[in-house]
Amino acid sequence: MLPVADPRPTPLPEGLGADVPRHVAIVMDGNGRWATARGLARTEGHGAGEASLVDVTYGAIAAGVEALTVFAFSTENWRRPVDEVRYLMNFNRGLLDRRQAELAADGVRIVFSGRRDWRVPRGVLRRMARAEVETSANTAFTLNIAFNYGGRAEIIDAVRALVAEGVSPRQVDERALARHLYRPDLPDPELVVRTSGEYRVSNFLLWEIAYAEFVFTDVLWPDFRREDLYDALMEYQRRERRFGGVTP
Ligand code: IPE
Ligand code: IPE
Ligand code: MG
Image (cartoon, rainbow, N blue to C red; front, side, top):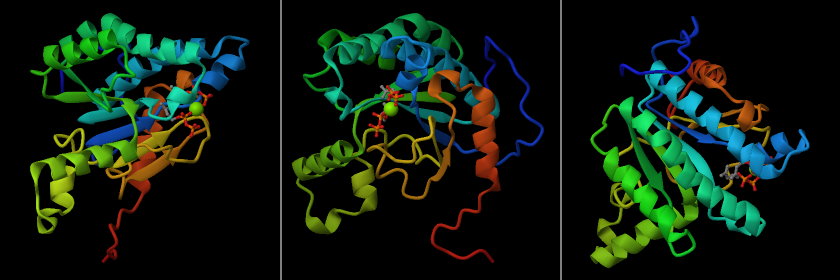
């Protein structure tokens, strides 16, 4: 475990066993409703979600999780009002400006999954690339930010890469395709958490979640803290994973 300068050190819950997932993925949902309920602009909800992200990252490290993938902006989120999209683009850069140094000092590697295409402002792409380079020596924990990410787009991009390599049909198998996904260095997430009482996948990690366990919670993302993550981890530990087989 990392020697972290955790801003809110919290003991792990008694009931948390040793079988902690290596990789947890979170659909950080409910920011807009959190803000609307308070008479605030939707973007204030996104801003409030930053504290959740930082707290959950430290909680994941403390629990012994190795990687966290968080859904920050989907390929479908371009359909939102232009002001909200602009806010979310700049928010990504601002988050790095505000948090990268602190997280990196605590051993966090920051990476991104998603399409780095013309729709993302160039300055934001540059800042993302810089964060990846500057934190690349950290190996103990990975924070993977899914940004301009779509599960179908990811599979299409992998297929394109395979075709560009000139592979023959016989060489196309699950391993070959998985090697061309955005983060072949990360294991598939064993656990996916979605906040805000929505029970859908919304194009998140379609390939990687083939056998993931799902935990849904009504908590809105800006209210979500590491204690909620620990609840999800304990729920995960009560599940019986069979992978299509039978339990002896
Ligand atoms: C999740 O919160 C953040 C993003 C999708 C960027 P939402 O903005 O989807 O919040 P709700 O679902 O409208 O409450
Ligand atoms: C999924 O949430 C995307 C992110 C959390 C970034 P959405 O709020 O966009 O998903 P839908 O539209 O409710 O399915
Ligand atoms: Mg939503």
